[in-house]
Length: 274
Length: 288
Image (cartoon, rainbow over all chains, first blue to last red; front, side, top):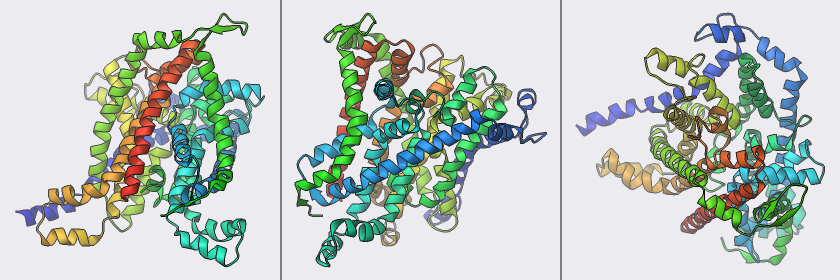
């Protein structure tokens, strides 16, 4: 009986991930479906595919500055944040992975608490802090604010990757007469290139998906696309078609980069610890 | 790995320290400041001691929101962890299916959180959503705007949709690290499917499962954007979680004192959870 049952359950095992993926894709399919319909069609007829496919919703987004500037703003602060986070995290992660120093464990723990801190706690104080510096509604304000959770994340991920590089490599390089900066840039960074890619990807992602802080710190000039979307919902105009198209466009950047990190994505989520 | 003692390493950590201190310590000090003072406006503050903390701890509002948070976390963990394990166990091990599964499954994780909310808000609507419309056609009375139970079900399904992939990816990473020799040995011994899972796969997944469990618990504990978009905390207060309540208090009503006190209590809970996370991680780091 065992020998009969085993192959059958194995032959059917593809069903489980397939069904799960169908479940994942259904709501996304519905959003894409809506994005190709006129709002009047969305409200009047219920159909599984657009009866009169239209690109109008996308045209609206790409021609109206209040829409497309949202994307530019989001991408600007996300890229700024990724650059800052990875740059400052690199030396720190090296220090954590190679040396013991006074208070290192407490520091490492304190960093983690910031990754776990609820953004809701920080929304109001951030607003006041950045107002005091006159940084409200600038890209750099959001970029620095997102460092709160992205720098700790980058440090943890990079530390995980760096710990996988044997220490003998450092020592050999020093014996060969490399100075620390030269060793770091010429030898060490190429060795952990995939780790840097993964850390950058995760900084990009968490800055991209975050809304509460980004929305609190911006009003018009640096307003992220996600906030533009919520305004549309509340402004009763409720142009469902444009809203759906905007949603679809926010999914695309993630979908594009995910392919490059597919093999490391679990390691990133586990903060470099798989 | 043996680490050398070197206090100069502090210089390498310094940039991180300055940056995170600016983003974390200064705002936290502001919060502490507000939590112990009261104001009549005009920037005049006076000492209020622990009044706000007592107010918060004695209010039903806080305990209700906390209870909702804990129930929500418990339910989504009870669904996502077993579901994630089952899916990971059935994922293809090699071939073209692997990258396809990984990329498609990771997709929901990269969607901005408010768009996740929007997707489900639309998907569940009775008039224009696929889910709402289908349920209505089947004769099921479903309306997440008016019925608290439906609102909860929607939020839970949304969270399962959004985050189960995280558990799947972590478990899968644990599973592929098991050498083939283990399975061959089990086959020779005539081990059943269940004992392969119980004695080979589960122990290998223990560490990643722990990470998945703690991450999911903490992230669901501070959930804000998705329920805010879908239900706005309603109907009534039935889906008002701690974060939503806090933002309502601080930015909506501008009750700085209670909001600050609530922030600190909230933060202390998170601190305790992070400490558990850290201890668990470092001990399992030590075990390898």
